[in-house]
Length: 312
Length: 234
Image 1 (cartoon, rainbow over the protein chains, first blue to last red):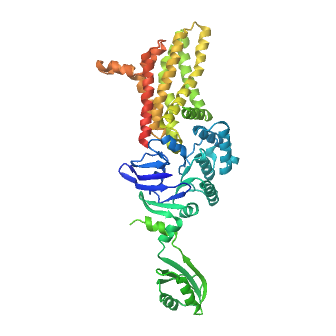
Image 2: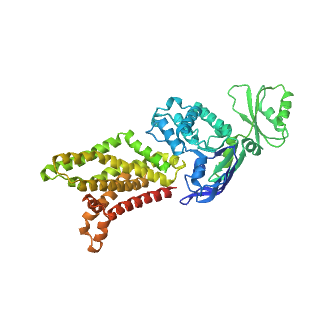
Image 3: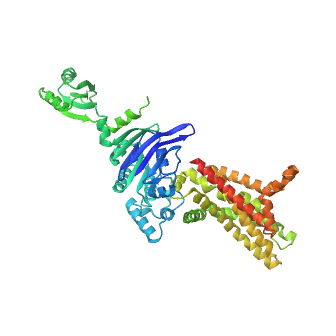
């Protein structure tokens, strides 16, 4: 659906996006993840035809963005960061204008606006001035703007930034519903966001792609080191540490501060063979310790993200 | 074409939903009306010559005030990004915005037709120069709108856009008035560049293709300039 090859963008001598290759297939929700200034927004702006790449090519379906810009823009709906809409216009007038510019007319226009009002939940605010809307509502109008032409590809730049948790869930639901049939690319630096909405995650840092894959594969691929949390009653640190360290695969045992006296909280760093938890359990069972908490912390997306994008 | 038309309609409507349009029109009518009628009964002649003589100067600061927001506002708020990623060409946007500015100038001129009408009741008005004057005024308004669109495309600050536009418009108006400062070899060139000179020709009632061509070239040159500036920003 989207084929990007060696995409590069220079701002003066600063390289914002450096030879990115990316393929997105139909029906995929792709999350572009990266720290601030990594080149996410620049990449999206080039995909939507707002910026002209310094070099490299973008093909959408069989069209090249350079030669058939108008046809490509018809296929794409785009919501820039923080929805920079006009201020002095009513919501209805704005949607009407966008529909007309997109070439809808008469009953088709009315029908489409009606659908979008339902999808984006705009029914109560059609007569309001966009400048008076809250951020969350403005974001919804922005989504309606992006979806007006019934685009095959939806590009969203930080669709949930600055929204409260309820609004985030609402926007996420709209995106999910839309993404069932359509291709979506969204950028974010909130990891839980990407995890909750995206099928595939592309991590960008300093203009380069540093990781690309489904949420699960990213987690597994980087999941060699595990951390296990264990809280025991009636145990002293020295004995417990010695016993647990003797187990095959445990590299280190650390004590954590326990607010309640009598509880011993341990952090076990492990690598190597699996089924370690079974053996830890068996080991604890032989003693008279009481196990009150026992969890394994998978390598979270946060950790992967930090490892990949850390300043060296 | 429909895209240009939609942008034109939206921009023109924008003028009239905010108080700016009415304020600018009032200021324009006050200034032109006062300067015209303050000397009208002293000269005791039934024509609109004073009105048309002053028009290029008045337009020089009124029209940049009208057009300053066309691009600057969008660049400032970022809505330009949403506009440009709609299926429209940059040319459609520039043309639509220019037409809105030019149409506003024409709308602003319309109430001054009352001057001509009221004079025709009290004296023997020659309609030739009046018609010529209005055709010239519309052309002049369009040309200065193109200048304003260009100035607006340069910056996201509306005040800077206004001042830039005003400076260019004043220069175009006054070129032929200050030629005696220049060496005689270039006098003719400077006179030909001046919008004031061509406007005077038309407002005498002589519709010469050279003058019309001049205004068309100014419009084209500045719109093309705005197009290049916006292209460069990408």
